[in-house]
Image (cartoon, rainbow, N blue to C red):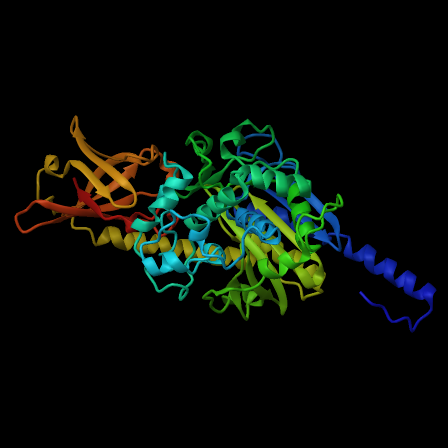
Length: 522
């Protein structure tokens, strides 16, 4: 930055020191704001990192790792950062671009000859850049049921199933978030570099940045001594999802959301991004030109006016870049991404013009905590008017919850409890198959009607009759919070033609995309 020395050198030096000291202090009310967020949103633990002007201003934990247990969250406590991982995958591809091994606009099939979408035109024209920006034409969260809850499919096997997923929109016409194409990006990295995604990201990014405590494999996460536990509301009460690490989590989805990190490491990651690829240890992790591509808006995203309860959060634009969201906050450009996975929610937010980065990691579901804390910190450095973000986002959370409960209550009132299935229960039993997912087995044993997804051990439960030819799949793992309707369609002769599924609650994670299944009887 250039300075104009109209004043004496002594005065300028003194003023600069005052500004620097002020910039490198966290907001004086930060502890109170975080404690308010913990209680208001029923979050057991939060960890935050703030970097400013090339320095770590704050890396600190609050609350506990697990409800009912005394161990506190600190700056070293690991949290799965879920889709914040996408920025690492995009950065890995940027490294291959700067080495001349790929170009952003190379067709994917140049590097993965076996890659296929359901449309031959899209197959031929899908580029490396297209894998990262959610405009492929796939429906939102397409293929996620192949990953969440964990399945026995390999990463390559999941990507190969893209050819069986019908497109919902024209190529490059519509934003629709996906994870499966980030798995394809991971396969590109493997094909071009000769290393799997985990080894490449570990050696070329984490080691270079100095992120010594982050973990790239869920299969190794349970072994970590300082680890947050996942929590979420189940039947209206926040509780431990104690099955999170018992689900046999595989590493197949890692390029889309597989990293676990903490405040200390996320601070280093933000400093690298804000300093054009240069780490505090002196390593040049990537060239400054990479930032131009990574942060450049590619796909416009739909957005509405901010609700009155959080009116200052109103934005003028919103879009997806390469592994990052780009928008504005109080007139300042923001580069950010969030992540959510079974009781963990996080967000990393960069304000390039302020040389400011904020990361908030939580072990409870809901966006209110990270938004409240991030906006409060940003307002401090922007010298913006004071605003009670915790109160505003709490109002929205309560209103959303009440609306969903009202809708679910309405569904129950419309149920015809006098109706009965058209066929004997034994007639519904059998093996059904979806073209992209695979087999689903429905059986009747000992007067119980059950359902089991062949490739997803956690998707097993009992079927209860709802009305007519619709049943409810109630999963044994209640922590999934993903009970679903299954409706059987009959042919004219009374035989079963196919079955479709739909999550009951709007609170169900969209990755449980049962609605994309068309189960045909074998």
